[in-house]
Image 1: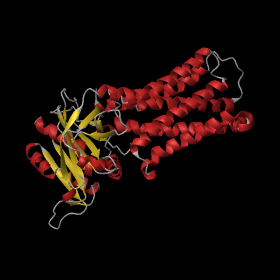
Image 2 (image 1 turned 135 degrees about the vertical axis):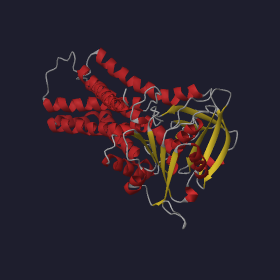
Image 3 (image 1 turned 45 degrees about the vertical axis):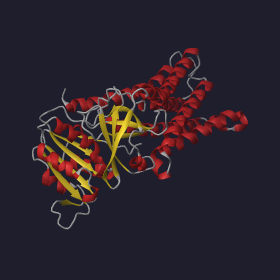
Image 4 (image 1 turned 90 degrees about the vertical axis):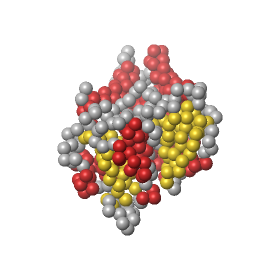
Length: 442
């Protein structure tokens, strides 16, 4: 199938499936319902509540990390959708209360502790908790929240919201009357619980018998380090160049500390792999101190940010800073495979000293059909290359005139990615020809 149609088919399929799943319980709840209508706005407000609850439950599936589920928009795209779906659920919850209160003022009694204190406290609590959950997801770094504890509380808070929402729907008992309807919602919620346990317990247990050992830590630049690990008495991980894995340091995978990192090594060696990591936070700031022999657990591989299968494709890479990591994995893999395809790499950095893999890239350039355009913000005096940031003018000077078979890969800081993607779109490059990846979402 043509990549173009596969791309759009994937988007339509996943969006369609999402809509069907979150609205199905709403329509099912209307089956075998003999109560008289309470008016359009009251029923509409009730419907918003049911859809919001269904979205919250489905959120657990979006983050369940099923490797055989590979949407065409990538894992980071799935996480971005997860975040936006959380916003939609919050809006629906607010809409649920607002519409019902405007439709019939008697519904305000649900928040009156004098009428039913436990119910009123629970409903106010769930709205506050859901708001905090959403705010922490959007502005975790701004608030200075520790990633590990945010990850733990995020899942528990989401589950609390779902359980309170389920209890509210069952106690109102208007559209959930009847044993089979109650059973359906309980089963639906049970799936969310199972998915949370699958990620936090099932997956760590599955990889507990496949440890890795750290075989070296190499300094690439002043604050960029490559962690090399080797499979400890097993066959390693069958990853593709450009993919990533969740990494846990220590003698057990049952830890809060688990972070996603792209492979930077060639996919031709499945027993020994590398992750190139920039010092950006509490966990990454300690990478340089990891000792040889330290036990490591890898969960994966994940991601669709991989090389195209079309051997006639012209490949254009755009990398900024540490965004070179998955691209380096692709270049090393292509080099090991003697890949004949034409490649252009636009590589933006602050200066020469912060340019990771500079000497290796020069060596690879001699064996691959590769052209590298270094773009430096602060070039040395004798610099004859491109300066500033990767922009439209620089791109026009080096991109091929014939772009019919070109596939683009973008990886770097969000501002850089947005600028390059906007430039490509303005140049009428179709979305299905652009691949981007970002872990800023976590």
